Structure formats: structure tokens, C-alpha cells
Image 1 (cartoon, protein in one colour):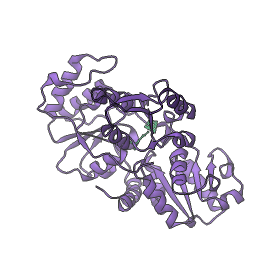
Image 2: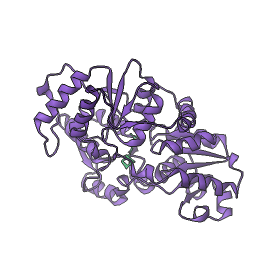
Image 3: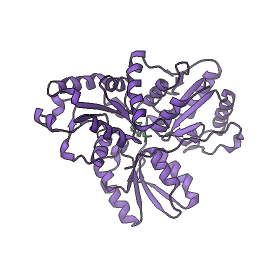
Image 4: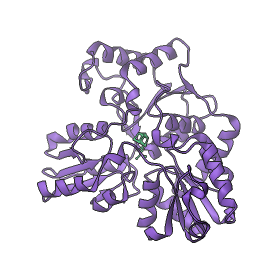
Amino acid sequence: MSSDSERLEIRWNPEQPINEIKYMGDPPVERALLEEIADLRKQAGPETIILGHAYQRAEVIQFADVIGDSLALSQHAAALEQVKNVIFLGVHFMAETADMLTPRDVPVVLPDLRAGCTMADMAPVEEVTEAWRQLSTVIDVSTVTPITYINSTADVKAHVGKNGGTICTSANADKVVKWGLERTEKIFFFPDQHLGRNTSYKLGIPLDDMILWDPDQYLGGNTEEQIRNAKVILWRGWCSVHQHFQPQHAVYWRKRFADINILVHPECMFEVVQQADYAGSTGYITKMLKQAEPGSKWAVGTEHNLVSRLAIDHKPRGVEVYSLAPYACLCSTMFRITPEALRDSLKALLNGRLQHKIEVDDDVKHYSLIALEKMFEITGKE
Ligand code: 13P
Ligand code: SF4
């Protein structure tokens, strides 16, 4: 599993003639709508920055100034200067993180507030703090480092910040988990059990030293002895999109093409990552395919919009890209950012309104920033 993050990529050129719109969508959207967005984008000028996650639909993300994985986008947000507004094409926790990292007077808007993350929703802060309280009845919690995946609410980020912990993304999880394991006897990893398990195993922790914490059960469904013996406690959360990839899909592709490369996101379950040749963040996946040899074949286990865009982009070079699963694994919340929603955000900005502004409470922001700064201290801001 790699910890490389894709370098930032600047895509949108405001001088680009409107007839160069590259992606029309599938099924295609009205050309007039894309032309309207292009025109509004130009009017908004360089004071407005559009940050976009790689899972956004092609017809929307082609308007992003910066495309990246969660790490690259948060690094970029932290470095923004001389910008008036940010439009975030992604999901709620990403826009929240950007809001905390950008200067106080730079508002961040999310074109559709319903664009959440089902995995982040699996760890409500009330359940996380209750789990921490229950843990403290069995062991001294100062021997545990809480680590939350960036796919979590700002409240959960604040919880780890208050308790000496930090945040990781899929691109830097190796370094962060290693730091946590060196700092204390145990780590408590929220909310993605798969990223936590895959990373800890890669760092040499046997599966027997990991326990699952089910928030619906007292002590997460564990005995006191199991808690005392565990090195890694994994919150019972998962990504509903990556959960679809199964080990038998890898078996299928290997039978179909002996020379297939299997490349997956570490949110996939342990058994799938074990079958893969490579695993890493969306930035890593993008980079691997950019470097792929002509004639090579790839079965990719991640979100549908990214896989289909990579298939289109690399086809002319003779690189064949397939979805690891035999059907499209779509992130339906990422998909909520439609071209219409982006158009409406731009229109509102040009009329002096901030539509769907993301704002994090000051106290939550204070503690979340402690955790985010710790992450940058461990893995770098560049
Ligand atoms: P990355 O950090 O790899 O971009 O992943 C974010 C995400 O939500 C994957 O499901
Ligand atoms: Fe959340 Fe999964 Fe969608 Fe990523 S792909 S934003 S983890 S639901």
C-alpha cells in the first residue's frame, strides 16, 4: 500500500474557448448548461477557487482549478492566499476541512448540502465520546492515541484533537498510524475499519492484535480482557461504495487476463487489498495510471466516476482500465454535486450571495485544527 499523494493538477483555464469543454457527461447534459458554467466561471475570476475531489462527475470536475485526493486538497486549502471564495466540489467533511484550513475571511461553499459521506455518518460524535468514556472504565486512555480518518465530521476531529490524537487521509495513513503506535501502547481508529486494518497490518500488526468496536454494544462488543490485549481498536465503519469490491472479483480478472494489474483503494476490505497488486489513495491510483505502460491492463477498485474518467483518459495510449467489480460502484453523495448546483453556486457568488456556506463552530474548529496541524507536522504540508 502506498502513501504517495498525487501532485496537484491545475485543469481549468479561464481562457480556454468554450467549445473545448471536454466532458459532456453520461448521459450527456445540455451543452448550453456547460457553456453557461464556463461563462460564469470566467466572470467569477481568479478570486474564486474551485477545489474538486477526483470522485466528482467528469462534466462537473472539468471546471475545477485544482483536482486531488483528500490530502492534496487539504494541503492546497491550507496554502491558499489572495482568494475571496472557495467552491468545493466534493462532500461535506471535505468542505468543512477546507473551511477550517483556509483564512477566516475566505468562505467555503458546497454546491449541495446533501452531499455527505455515509462513512463519516457512521461515527457520530456522541457515540465516539461514549466509546471513549467506556474505554476509560477499562484502561487508562492516556495509553491510547485516537486517530480519525479525514472522512469524519469536524466534531470527531475535535474529539481526537482534545485527546492527543490526530487525523489521517488514505495517502498518509501509514505515517500517521506508525506515529500513533510509537506514541502509545494502542490506537483507536475511526471510522473506517478497513483503512485502519489494512494500514496496521502493513505496519506489522497481526490481525489477532486488532479488535472491532461496535458502537451499538457495550464496550464495543468486547470483553475487558480483549480490550486490554488489543493494540489496535477499529471503529465498526465502512464505505458503502468500496464495500462492493469482493476478493472473487480479483480472481475473475486474473483468470480473464493473466497480466492484469489490480489496483485498489485501501477503503476496500482486507481480503481485497491482500489480493491486489497495489493499493493507495485516489491520487496514487491516478498517478499509477498516468505512469502505466501502453498495452497494460488494470482492474481498479474504487469509485465509478474516477474509474470511468481514467478509462477515457488513458484509452488513447492503449492502457485498458476496467472496474474491478462487474457493475458501477457509484458514490451517490459525491454525485449530488450536479452541473446545475455548480451553476447556481457561481450565480449566487456573482450576485454577492454565499449559497450553502459551510461554517464550523469556533470551539470545534480550535480542537480540530490542533489535530490537523499535528497531521501536517507528521506528514508535511507540501
Ligand atoms: P482519498 O483521500 O483517496 O481521496 O479518498 C477519499 C474518499 O472519500 C475515498 O472514498
Ligand atoms: Fe464517503 Fe465512500 Fe463516498 Fe468516499 S466513496 S465520500 S468514503 S461514501
